[in-house]
Image 1 (cartoon, protein in one colour):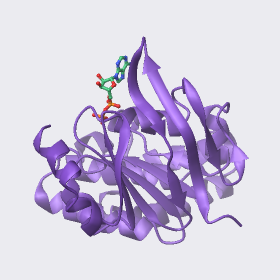
Image 2 (cartoon, protein in one colour):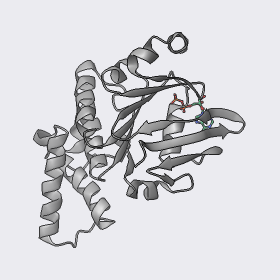
Image 3 (cartoon, protein in one colour):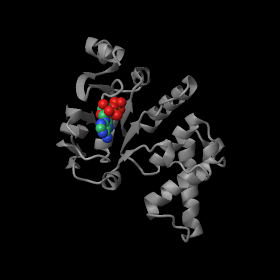
Length: 247
Ligand code: ADP
């Protein structure tokens, strides 16, 4: 088995001639937490969308678990276990927290809302949904309407619905964006927990968030890779410091 689970070669995205992602060669090692960071406009979100197939690249290839996934659709790569976190807009605000996870499980296992399924199947969805809520620390919120959850807890729910898809590799897009300190610490601890036995690629603006979390960090600036290494190495790189100060 190759050491790398996700690899890009010459990954490039142009928007009408503007190069947002420029010749990026990324190699994410199996079983690690890898951070993709950079100042605003660095190309992180574009990269995230390329890797999860929500955008087609202009040039370059993406390999996941030994396969070329460059031409695949998002649902195909999700079936292979490469799963992205969804934004809060994907949480159904009028359903309960438990129902949100159950719907994610039903979609994963049954294809659509299979209300006609037997009670025993629905009970198995329920018990798995409760386990997932426990994993993300939301058990006490199970019966609350998702729309009533505080912001930080909504991001945890988003992670629970992502875990319902049985990911081998998780791609998380700024899971702590817009959060207060306590929530940031809680999500950082949660990412550490869900990374056990999986690979995680974390797209993040905040250097502090990746400091205690990531085994390897790739720094993007103006679409290109500026530096790579562990936190201590990239944090003292003068080009990285200058890129962040200039943002
Ligand atoms: P980041 O997530 O690091 O802040 P983005 O990937 O969102 O960076 O954006 C990188 C650059 O690409 C920015 O200059 C942005 O304006 C540009 N860009 C992103 N998406 C589009 C698009 N759909 N059309 C044109 N330019 C875009």
